[in-house]
Image (cartoon, rainbow over the protein chains, first blue to last red):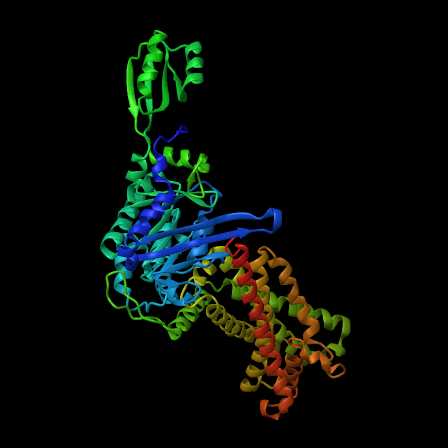
Length: 351
Length: 270
């Protein structure tokens, strides 16, 4: 969907930040992650690229937050800046109240990450050996969390493969091992970049259920970056959408979807012909046309009372709809819309 | 390392540096015994080149080779030790970058620095084992005998190789910054040959180069039978200073390169 998002303006980052600021006094102790005015620029002079532009946000303990954005939006740089893999130019990051610059070792004791495109663990070691190794480097004695490791293996269906070298596992299993090794050290805040990539439907659902359980029962905070909108919609309490290094939306999935009155209208009619379709395209936001014999199935994007205007227009041209159906927008539509029109919120102000 | 609570709210027993040492060394041990092909292959390649050198040299030089054979064996032993330590550390850091595990270590309470040092130590021990096999086979093959005082040989060889380990760290740092430069850095190992055979008696200043002074002491220890305590304090002091000078220097280069890579945002790009 590429039309205007009618009342999205009251859901801009600026206001969300304000709302967070309002709640801050109550929830300050629970913030697992606080980022304040974080910026990262690459290059010099005229070739400077601002990957992350004065970003500020907080994430409360035990929540699952989705981080969305098109390629090049700055998600990875933001995550890596928080994790210390990229040194930011400005701003502060606090993990569980600890500034990563002042006390990096203490701050990172609570954090781990599974990054996309990397192995993340040692393929020539077995699954169990990886869990023990990464819990040790995370500062946790592996013997003390042996039961936790066993439970992780069971929950992620890795028990039978526990003593198999990771290199001998399928891609989906390797993905699970990565997740298990990230959780093996008892991290309270985990960053997961495309965790369901390569997983079959069942494994993906198991993983989502497990993430939800970890957040609910064990107060683990998860920052999830994925291009899979279904995963984000299903498990995330809150969604941050980035574009050009800034946040263009920050709210719960429900609120974000509620914030738009844009919707699709699907019409099937035998009266559609090339001439009418051509005129329809000029007058309305036609998103799909599927030829039928006779006529066509057409989807038009509209908002508010636009459906009545559309029906009047069709009636005036003797087009009798055989079937009319409204299509609610999904997160993907909203995402595309926001990231295509990110200039709506320049510096938090509507254009 | 402060203790922290785990996911179920229980106080967890924390892992300190002792556990870290055990974990890193155990991992290196597992890889060594579980995947011996690299080590065995390295031994065979080393012996093949020595065979070419020995039998080819006999044909070309005859008795002249036999007169300097002990020195050649000691030099070759030190060379295999050096390239083994250098290559394994430099390549290992490159692999960690490629696998994304270096990034994971960066954000742990320990960081990657102690892990890299422990890996370096493990590589030296591992290379000692394979180079010892090469040495024994060389001695049997040529019918040569050397003065093998374990304490003297191991101490001098280890200190000699520490300077190379420093070069390995520096090479690893360059890999972290510029990525696919492993093949170029591997060429550096051929510089070890002139370093090992550097004329330190005629040119004493060459002693400050890696391997040069250590090679001279090792020759005296293994060929002439000089014991560790029979070397002068200046000689041993120079050996220690060169060893730790290059090790610390290389390590600082690695640390600087890692920080620069983080600044440039290229730490994990491969």
